[in-house]
Image (cartoon, rainbow, N blue to C red; front, top):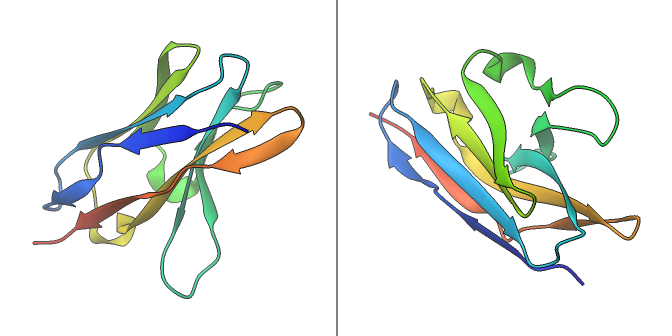
Length: 112
């Protein structure tokens, strides 16, 4: 079992920035990236870095969001120039022992 700790969500105005972080409790867990979900909708990929291949971004966030790690167990999602349509619960996604795990979610609200 993998425990994930997410942080960094909050309420911001359009054009502002947030940085989400995800830390995994298991060293061998592979942090893939971030998804988001709004009420009544399916969870969608925001930014992931697969084990093989290049980083994938949701088209609407390209050029504004970026993924980076500072060590094997922590990944960040830097979100710049936030828009109201970015409002959602953001979930960290991890692969471990051929299974996917999800964080508890962190709310991001963009509103003036």
